[in-house]
Image (cartoon, rainbow, N blue to C red; front, side):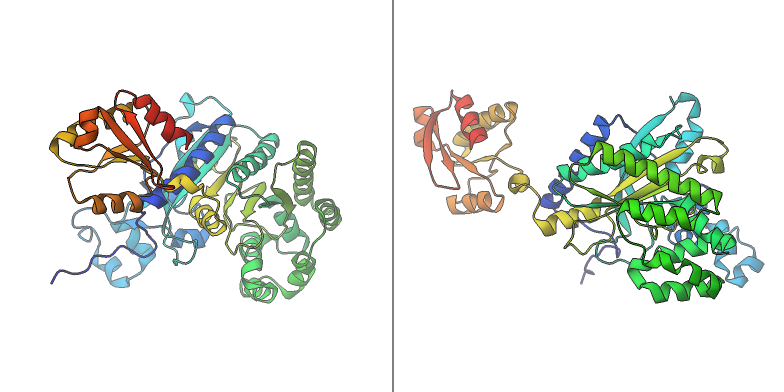
Length: 461
């Protein structure tokens, strides 16, 4: 007996309906990327391991899918290395490539390799799948799409302002009104670590702090202590855990707390510029909110940090995020090229829209009219009509066999087809057809020579 097939955990098959809905999101995101002046690029699904490793911190590195070398990959491993069973020593000898973890690091690699062909500032968008060896759960998959927009070659904070606007118009167009765009700055986090005496533990501090909304204050403190951050330092940082109020009130509190830190003060100034600019410009439906616990745990952010949460009432992780990464291209040898970018979490956006019923009702309508098949002669006439309708932009099809009428009509209902065309022996003799509205049962006799009338009836319904 054949074994029942399966797919890897954290991956999915997509039905026609799901693909239509995902395409709907893609199209809206892409449209706004283009209206903001971003250009499309694509990069390979896998990169050389050295391109990816070490760019995401220890936690990120553990989630990168490694690709085994082709052929007898163990042949080049010496006995001493093999017997140690040490993954960190063995992996470089049996794997030289890895699936991309995100689109930002490959983009930085792209910029370095194509720097002589790029006009700076370079605004690019990219919509492609990425892979992470994470524990699958609701809204978290091992294979998923990212929709990124980045700008490199400009240090202007107007880019951050523009990216906030981009988030706002995209989520408004998708119907996700009331989304919250959280904002922080890596310099603020560095300043906090400095003033509490934990400057040498910045990464450990931010990785733990970023988990505040997931594991709570006490466990965050425990994790910080486990990483070597002193109890006294944690106590100094404790006001952060409950910092609240308007953006202006939080900025004043941070300004006071970080007055002794040049780096922290610079971060507060950058936050203030973004907040004041957005207040002057206004947003359509999103809300911009400072969140000093936002860290996103990634090593390459150097300035602004963004994260978008779904509208209230929806239990879901972030549906977007990003930030400024001034030092990223320097890793690949190209110095002094500043960058900032954001990402849209397609899969989570899909789940939120599904939960809130935000997809258009007709989105599953992959076929607008179906011609019923009454036999070989009638089918040829119907196929000519279908060809005319397709040329006019109508999604039309002919049932492939002269099956029983009940079976063909059931097929039309299952496909959610709004119209069927009946072209039997009598109609063919009269040079006409019957257009039936499946929603209300209305039928109209229309001449075959008047395909434009059929088009008008279908498009106006």
